[in-house]
Image 1 (spheres, rainbow over the protein chains, first blue to last red):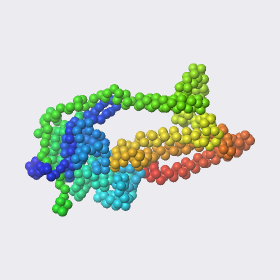
Image 2: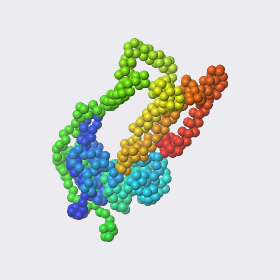
Image 3: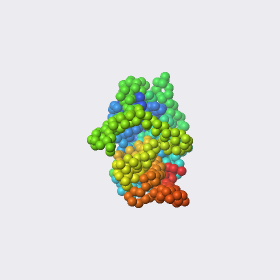
Image 4: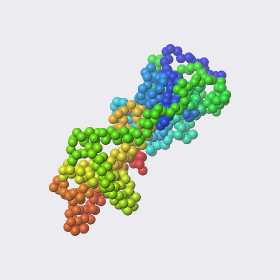
Length: 268
Length: 273
C-alpha cells in the first residue's frame, strides 16, 4: 500500500452517520436459536461506500436487515444519526437481490413514484422526481413498461432508482448484482460508482465477492463465519475499475482471501 | 456556500486487523429453543388452541341462547354426535355417501367433494329454519358456498407473496391496513381472482339447486324453478332450454367478465400467462 494517502482521522466535526455498537443478532428456526453475528461494531460515515464482506453464514445479510430495521438486535444497538433503529423506514431504502422486489402491477414510473406518494408527496412532484431519477439510471425509454418486460439488469436499475428517488440517508444493497450475468454485473458496478460520483450518497453494500468488495467499496468490513464476527476493517478507496487486475488490487484481494479462508495462517 | 460546492468525500480511517477473535458470549451458534416455544412452533398445537377457543365460544353462546331447537350448545352437539356414532346411524350414512363417492370414480368430483365437504344446499333446511322461506335463506347458503372458496384462495395467495415484496413494502414505511391494501392484495390478486371464479361458479350452482329443490322464493320462481316446472309438465325441451340458459350465463361470466378482468390486470402485469 505504498501510494495510500495519509489517513485523515475522523475529527469531532465528522460524526458517523450510522453506529453499529456491539450488535449480536439471533434468530429462531423451528427448533433452534441461531446466532448470526456476535458483538459486531463499526461506524459508517457520510459518503461511505461501506462493504460488508464475508462467506455465506457470516450473517452479513442479517446484519443489513438489522440496519434496515427488520430484525432487532438481541444485544447492542444500531443508531442512525444518533437515533436507535427500531423499524423499517424510508430513510434507509433497501435494494434486494431478487428481481421480484418491483411491484408487477405498476409501471416502472409508478414503481419509482410509489414510495414517494406513500410518504405524502403530491402526484405531480412524485412523477417528476421519478422521471428525473430514471434518467440517471438510463431508463428513460422504459418509464411506461411493466417490470415483466424488463431484463434482470434493468429491473435492478429500477430498484436502485426507486431507492435513490427517496433520497434516503443511506442506501442498503443486499447482493444486488449476484443474480446477474458477469458482463451485466460489471456494467452495473461501474454505473453504481458513476452514480455515486455524480450525486454522492452513502451506501452499505453486502457481497461475498472479494473483487466486487474492493471495486465498489471505500471501506470493507471483513466478517468471519459461524457466527459473524468482525475480522478486519480495510480501506479500498484508492482502487477503481482501472486498477482491476493490477498488482496492488490483487495483493489486497489475496490478503482478504487469506483472512477469510486460511484459518491456520494468521492475517497480517 | 463553500460547503455545497464541495463534493462529499468520505473520511479515511486507519485500518485494523484482528488476529484473534474474542470469545462468543452467546454460547453455541445453534442453541435449542425452550420447550414451550418449540411446542408453539408446531402448527398443530396452535390450531388445537384455536379449536378449543372456538368450542368455548360456541358453548357459551349456546348456553346463553338456551334454545337447543335453534342453536344447540357444543356439548349437546357432541352428545348427539357420540350417540349417533354409537347407534351406528352416522357411520352407516357416511358409508352410503362414501360409496357414491367411490362409485363416481371421477377424480374431479372427488377433489370437489374433498374441498367442499359441506354442500351448501344441505344447509338450506337449516337456513329455512333460521331465516324462513325467502331471499335471506338463499343469501345464507350462497354466502356459505362462496366464502370458503374465496377465503382459501385469498389465504393461499397472501402466503405466497414473496418475502422480498413484503420487505420492500415495509421499507416504504407502509404498515397495517395500507400495507394490506397497497401491497398484499395486489400481489395476491391472481389467487384472489381464481378464488372469485370458483366462488362464482359455486354460488350459481347453489342458487339453481336451491330453487330446484325448494321452489319459489318470495313469490317469484327463478331459473331452477323453471326447470323444475318443465320437468313436472314433462316438457323436456323446456328443461333443456333452462339448462342451456344456465350454461350460457356461465359462459358469459367466465368468457367475458372474468376474461376482461384478467386481460386488464394479471395478464397485463405479467403475473399470469
